[in-house]
Image (cartoon, rainbow, N blue to C red):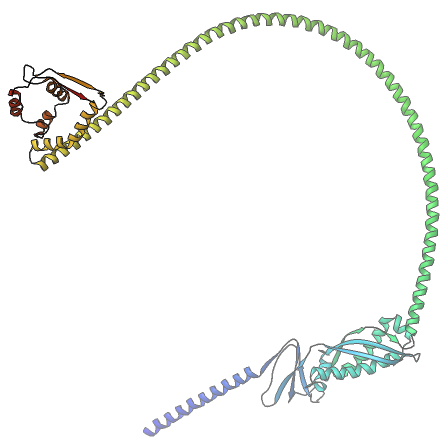
Amino acid sequence: MFNLLADNNVGATIGIICGVVVALVLVMVLLVCMLRYKKCPSDKIMVIYGKISSNKDGTYRSAKCIHGGAALVVPFFQSYTFLDLTPLSISVDLKNALSKQNIRIDVPSIFTVGVSTDPAIMQNAAERLLGLQLKQISELAKDVIFGQLRLVIATMDIEEINTDRDKFLEAISRNVEGELKKLGLKLINVNMTDISDESGYIAALGKEAAAKAINDAKISVAEENKKGAIGEANAQMQQRINVAEAESKAIEGENKAKADIAQSRATLRQREAEAMKLAVTAENVQAAKAKEESYAAEKEAEIARAFREKATKEADIIVASEIEKRQMEIQADAEAERQRRLAKGEADAIFAKMEAEARGVYETLSKQAEGMQQLVKAAGTADEAVRLMIADKLEELVSTQVEAIKNLKIDKVTVWDGGQSQDGKTATANFVSGMLKSLPPLDDLYSMAGLKMPKLIAPEQKDEQAKADKPVKSGKSEKKTD
């Protein structure tokens, strides 16, 4: 039993291995097919070479050409390459080509060729051009074109080559394209730039043709001028005939028109006269009616004017009185308003002035009170503060007293002293004492300030009384003071 199980396991393993191998093979085949399936671009021909299937006749083909499409390139047995379909421009500068008339000519031309896409010709291109560069292909085609171009020129006259270009190009295309097909190429275009010869035959043909063309043109011009002159003369004759006929018809028409005009004018004048008569009559009637209506209208207008003037005067008087009354009321109101505003302004000004003065007095008194308070505080007592203030103003007071008598002029004083008077004083003493008494009482001022006059100026009272009690010597003395 164990052997049976082992055999089963080995068989399953082998089966799995075989399956994996088959899958790998299939994957590899698929990858190879994907890599070897080649697509051909539209501007190229894909050439597959190697082991190619045989033709129907049993012969083997050298290559398989594909233009457009795709094909599977069998690995190990086949390979592939591309032929370029790019057109080739070949410049063929053919010189001294011998024509049918044994005249050598120069035929510079440009041929455009390319690889053909015809299946039979593609096979020729694969067999003869595969592996060549475009330049090599161009040189190969150029040699073929040179030979065929000389051959075509040798079979044609110069007149045919020069005048019938279509025939010349058709012959070149037929011969050159037949040879190019053998190489797998196709003629696309032929362009002849210029044809010339050494002998000047073509130029002479051109001059002949030009002279002939000029002469034909001159003849044609002369013929046309003659036809033009004849036609012009016939046209002038016909014009004059037509003009004369038209003038005669015009004169006839003018005369008829003038007669019609005269008749019409006469009829018009007659009708105008009748219309004028009717118009004058109607105008007179209308004028009479208009005057009558005018008189009636003027009468009504005068009545209306009288009423209007009366109403206007009444309205002017009433309106003027109302206006004057209104103006007086307005002026009275304005004057009252002005007086009220003026009184209010003056009252406001007086009030403002008095208020300002009161504020000034209040400020002055406040400051004086503050100053007095500071002075009393500094002096110690109120009496001392008063004395300080009087002492401060003493100089000003003395100046004021001196100012009172400074203008008093005494040129001369004469005193006759007759001896002592009843009070024991001499006349001179009484005079001096009276003069001194005329001065302001300085002693009183000093006493008010709490001060005393110097003894030199104001001796004490008891001293003065003692002196007064002394006897006065008799006799006269005369003192002159200047």
